Length: 359
Image (cartoon, rainbow, N blue to C red; front, side):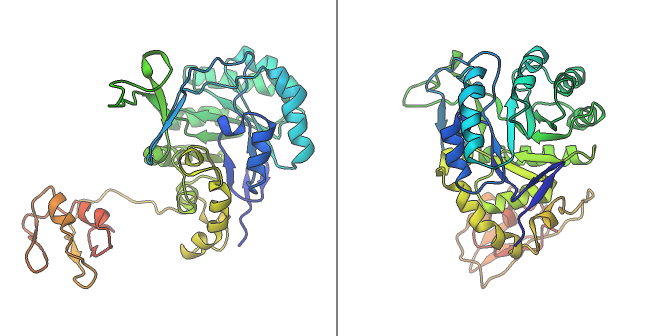
């Protein structure tokens, strides 16, 4: 199975890379992730001054991560003099250098980091998301480097189609979507408050909980511009990777999944990816990209059809039906006069015994 993909001018052996964050915060960490055969490396975001990170800064459940991480806690000089030379000596991976945040920051940083970077990723997490600023950020890089520039979008971007078109018109080379969502308040009943060390206990949400938001953003971006997209947000399996490719991503990044399931998630995903692609009918990773079917709005009522041989009579479909259309006697029965065809029962059946609702 050929897992190679192209992201603009970048050619990767596979579509999997870490997202910018604590797992890529110095050369040792990056080399550890690189050893799992990822397709590219992304640095933690570097700015002109080191970040002072409040602690505790990361909490997680099975469904999400909340963090108060900022940018790199190391000054740019440490990256230039130590981390990046040592990484480049030991790894031939394409390197995406993440930088932030203001145009003045970029004008100072890009000339210094251009010799290490195969591409730049610009984090807009702590600055306003407006078209004029996007143009200025891109210009600040292009003035000092010919490396590709990827803009990382926040989920709060109000009009991603407009912003994506702006990035394309301004000479940007691609988009990364999405950053973490927030601010959020991770209340802990044991503490009667937030466990985070930040002001007011707020943090930023990532992980599986934001996957539908990320997929939506990718779809909206792809219909408004021709730029490649790197998808981020909620990936914890090879199946998730293929979901993102199908939605339109040319490659993916993940980091929260490693904080939930462990750092070997990268090698596990890459081991599973060929089989998942094949099972879903793709002959290579590139075939999966932007393959999701384009649907039009429909209002036809399609009643659920229950396969009695598969049904275990767990009763979940009856319990959750919002239209009181299902009942359990000797088997699950459907009142077609009451059924609205909403699709909830089919999506929640744990054994896949219900069909007929979702096209």
